[in-house]
Image 1: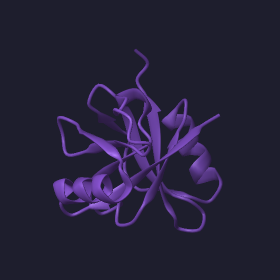
Image 2: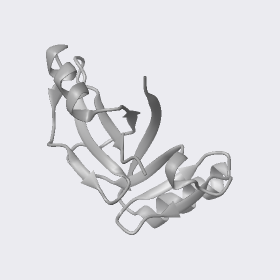
Image 3: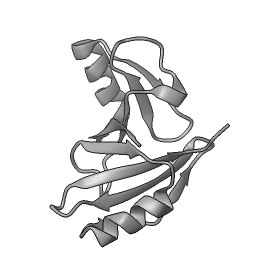
Image 4: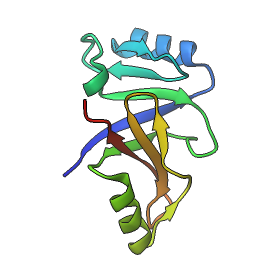
Length: 119
């Protein structure tokens, strides 16, 4: 049903990107907004199939976050609430790539729901 990726928060995207390139050999691609996609195998980043990303530290993203790709954020957000989780923000469009929404699971762990825009 879903794929799982990751998001790492950073205070300085360029510094964090350099760290992961130098230490682990990851490749990275800066998007036209404040976000960097990464490929953990060092291959060129495929925007549609990146392994994860580096984002600015925000109110919701304070530590590593799992990004769970779902067919419909609206449907899954309802299930989150029904299962004892909470919604942290409204569903947001992310450029031409998709939509995201941050939630907390029943134990307080922050997750990011991701819905791709079908080309």
